Image (tube, rainbow, N blue to C red; front, side):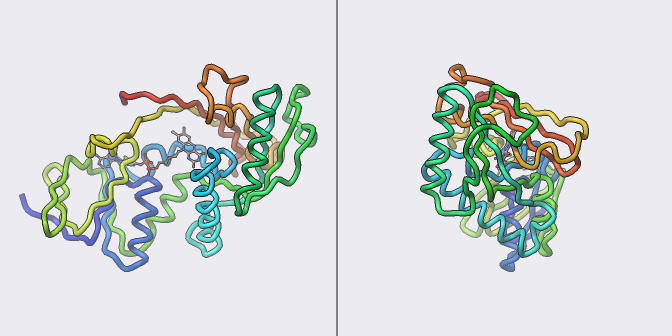
Length: 277
Ligand SMILES: Cc1cc2nc3c(=O)[nH]c(=O)nc-3n(C[C@H](O)[C@H](O)[C@H](O)COP(=O)(O)OP(=O)(O)OC[C@H]3O[C@@H](n4cnc5c(N)ncnc54)[C@H](O)[C@@H]3O)c2cc1C
């Protein structure tokens, strides 16, 4: 079996992580191949809500990283590469009952400790959003977050010159030696100086020693609704509670609603950890 091509880097996986890494490497002058078993954004990146959120992240390093990442995404959007993919929009987090109101208190104090683009612009009774029912006790409105459908970001990143797309091509294994790495694609082989593994939850198939726990989720997309009903993402504070508590103590379902530019609403998503894909 002959070596088909030589690259500086082979990026395994054309999700948002692989596509972003490939764009940064190609922009720096590297010769990059991106290999995917199916095609771009075929897995989690194509199915996600697309919220670019700081509010939903646990306080501490994750929230600080999310804030830095949001700033960087806004910069790439302003510079053009993500201009058609990312857009800024307000976020609304609502709550009722003791656990949700405590989660909103924690959200507001968390955002005070993070320097970055996300700010509370209003915190009070749930007025101004017609879609919220009368039982809702408190609404926190945030400015600075955004929305970026994963498939749009992946397409934008992969448009860089210097990236060779290779799919459908499931990677079956790799051999590392002193000179680099040989990537095995069934009856083809690629040679590269470096291999970047960005296979999402499937990374565990090639690197079984990694502590990756696959997670499943479901979401659905509605038909087009009336324009302007919801100007930004709407999240139940139960979603924040779910980040710190077991799912069975949730006060209410952790609903998240993302209005899409098409006028549709993306609603979801459930999350469940499981060890078998
Ligand atoms: C329902 C849901 C909603 C979400 N909502 C959000 C959200 O609103 N905001 C947010 O920030 N995050 C969200 N996430 C998380 C986010 O989508 C993921 O963290 C992110 O997309 C992971 O990207 P990735 O590139 O690591 O993996 P993936 O997108 O899973 O990409 C991995 C790629 O590797 C390929 N691959 C796998 N095995 C092989 C192989 N052997 N050979 C070659 N290629 C292979 C796959 O085909 C796939 O294209 C959500 C996730 C889910 C499931």
